[in-house]
Length: 302
Image (cartoon, rainbow, N blue to C red; front, top):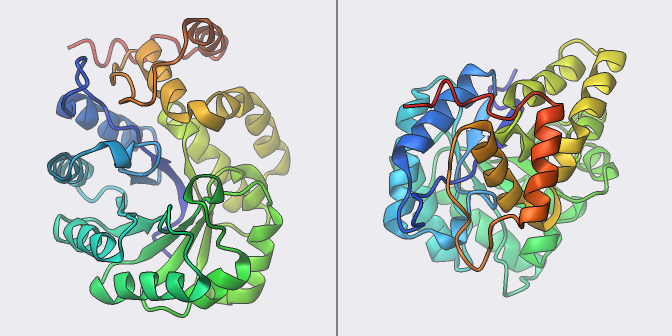
């Protein structure tokens, strides 16, 4: 059984109150809490981690902090997407050198590359490192859609062993597995619950920033116990949180939620804005209903 399975949190990047630097203490707290709550893996510097708003020096600091704090307890995959192939290669080499267990790579997001260009891009990354590559399909942000037939072609590249499928077409999971067989493993990006039943081996989740234990349990109930009733009950309970951190507010709502739970992680960096006051109030009500508001305050009081 592959060690890369389960619910992986695509982590927020905590910032100091002035937004000018990474809050390393909060990042360590977040990593340790996630692992103690049973999360199966961590993905710093993805979209939720505001990777495009972070300097190269800050990237290195985030990677070093997450890898050292995780201490081998769970796999850590680092987001290394870039518009230029040479930069994606450099970032992937850097992540491996700093101890990452793998990398997650979104396609170039401005040049709208052809399939041949995408293949060349990922092949150069795969050839440059020895850790696994998770291809990240998110056409809503990358401006390119890695359809199952393209994933099939990419799966023949050495070290390309996983895909994060982030469309709302759950049949993509079925089609990728049918085309690729055991060459690639599918992680859901949005439809975790639905994708598990079709054979996805994991979920790169935003909501697990706030609810790591429930998010990990959802995978376990399906993949390890085939408990349809239990999984559906849990899914319906956490669905409001999943919806809250979906869409455009996936960064702002997640950061606001952690703050309300008692782990301040700062606001998003501009051009993103903090969650508006009316939405903060509604999110606070939902967190209260779920018993999450200020649930972390005792642990992180100091």
